[in-house]
Length: 337
Image 1 (cartoon, rainbow, N blue to C red):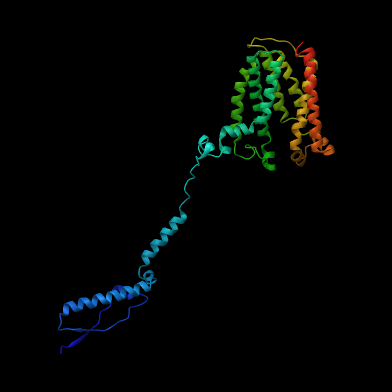
Image 2 (tube, rainbow, N blue to C red; image 1 turned 45 degrees about the vertical axis):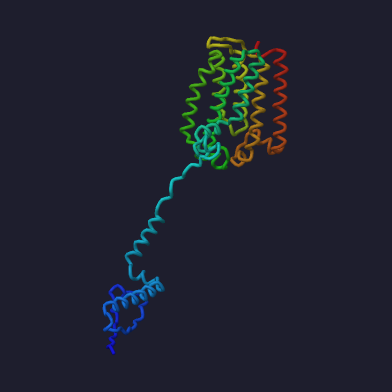
């Protein structure tokens, strides 16, 4: 009978750090029956058992390879510290296509349009163009009047938002890009200068004297944005600027040398009254903020006594009455003498 020898597999250095060690087993090997093959077979069986033990103890590798764990931690920290990816504009839809994926509120031309009080500018320009056409002015002259007044009213809207930027910011008013800080004051002043350089030749296209009257109307309105605006005489600039508009129409013609006639005094007075009525109508929407700021102008005093709704109704009725009077007087005596 062949001798039997006990073989014990020695533990490699790599396995010495395992948290869970593989159980040692003794195997009986027949030395007489091909010892080399027997040794290889035994080693294969032992390695399989060690692999099973390692699979059952996954945490052991964290102790066995601290450098690798540190590298993984550093990678995780790097991912946390990486800055966010830049915003990719959404170009879907018509708005995204028109504005390149940007928010319309961040587009400069739209911000300038919003700060220009576009509704008031368009309404006033259309009214002046219509009056010019009704007064018998040719279509080209009426068109120039419309464009001129539109540019002038745009300048007034921009200037008003510059003056009121701190109040608009304090009250958190919507639709005020200058007050919200989205539109720089310097940018608006630059737009005003450019628009004024356009306004001068437009206004004088229908005559130098007529253009001077309209430029004076714009200057008075801009002065009214900063002088006597919060007190009892807040209406003065509205009355004065509107009173100059009939002269712009009556003295106008075609070309810089055109000379017309002086306006009818009754038309001038009614135009001034219309300006006061428009002032009251416009003031109604800001009575709360103006009262908080300590303003004492006439629309606010009447609003506190009558109420905002009643004041708006009376102001609208007054303005409509003045417009009717203008139509009646104009049809009888005309715009100019």
